[in-house]
Image (cartoon, rainbow, N blue to C red; front, side, top):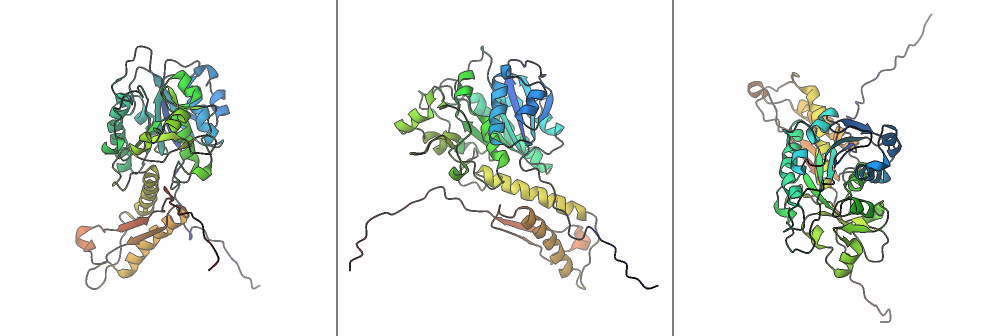
Length: 392
């Protein structure tokens, strides 16, 4: 008896690698925790989940940072957290050689963390540097944070670090220019909610900033006004001053001009916004923004996941010993397909090119050039507005 049998195949289309764009982590320095344990890694998926695991409103600073994270990030967002004693300085929290802190936290996640924030309310005996606006510990920590981020980038598990830039003296003119620090995988966050400021005057709402980044696609600027105001209650503070007072004085722009992600205000707009997404590096650096870092980090993950499958694969060469043109096109195509699929809407264009004039037989390797064309940003809008008389 005649028949036609059809077997469904699978695997021809290829899967898109998981890039974990919004997975975040926080190291929070506190005096103690009500139930949860210091130097222990926790994973939360909502504020309710954190409370069910033992977080308490009595944990005050830790509770507020996590609550502000989930006021921005939707329920289900993965947040890795480690609480440390608040005598530990920021520089130690992000020290790659430290036993506890950022490295332990990111390692525990098996490399899925992409965004890392650090914040602390210092113990009562802590004396910050008061000859500068920002506590020097925050600035010093940027060096270790950069090293940490570079280490993870080399392992194809890139992260971007947000450091709480604690304001300790707004009365001094010495504000460290973050654009001179050459730390393009690190951002310094200035400004906090009334609740954060009550617990630590000069503290920053790092949780809120981290939550906004976590829910955003990688190319999105944390300061995009159309995404809505920062989800914090009450007045915003920078040190002892309200954001509104600094806005009215005309001095609020000093912080973003000097390379800080700053709680900001716009005329005729209710609420507060993040000023921009700078990293602690020069304005001429390709990675001067959080968005540019997140875009290249995602492209890096996709590139590794795509080409690691080709390691030790045999390839054809042509009659002259050059890489076969068809092979070159195929290798270009797989990464272009992976990136253009996974990053649709996040970049303007992506192109890979392989020069076939490579002696693969002798070198046992090929060189590939990848170019990402990013999206542009309307950071300033200049308008010429005037009258016109239609009579001519």
